[in-house]
View (cartoon, rainbow, N blue to C red):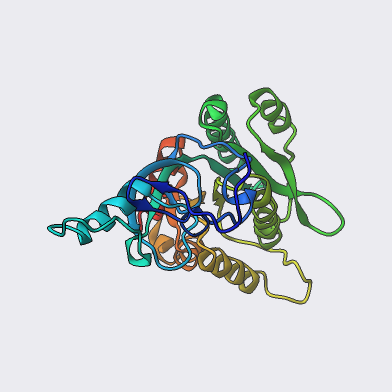
Length: 294
């Protein structure tokens, strides 16, 4: 069947130009490689997710809500018999879609030697593995960045983003203890993991969980102050809206209000937790609170 150029199909008395009502801007608006998860309900304007409701269009419409558009056009003709139904630009309505996005959890683990390091390692490993137990159901990905001992203290990605429980449990057994605390470099490496994963897992919600005492002693650039670098990176996380949870491994004492971990949480717009409160449930609650703007 051939269609003449400029042909406008007619349905009864309704005239709709499909080229204007349903503009094709490329396949990218129709197909997304990653699947929806079951963690947090997100609103999207692209053509993915379940059609929830319609809204007035603010410009070019790529996902027309045909039912709402027809109702708006019919409303203009209320009480006027004999007039044909014709879609006007002001009648166009756009679909609002919802789906649940998975999490991309990037843990930053302070594995420098201290009196609390054994407990910190075990608790953090347990939380990571608890997320991975049902990661394939929720389509979550979990990653881990920790310190490594080298000539120049730095951090390394011990666990690339994965949802494999066996792979993670094997790699988590080999995390060594170090004598230095290059926390700024660890945050930078974790940010790069998130930045690269955004391309591959487009609908995932990136989350950074930092388990530390907040006392860095090694900077990225040797001449810089590690605390200044730490504050700069936390501000970047806040500007980019990356949900951040800071877990303080230091015992709660008189100076806990003025702790560096609390300052990191404030600068990043994140949430502060103590090590005793660290669990998969507390992290999910904190992230939901951040995403809800609470």
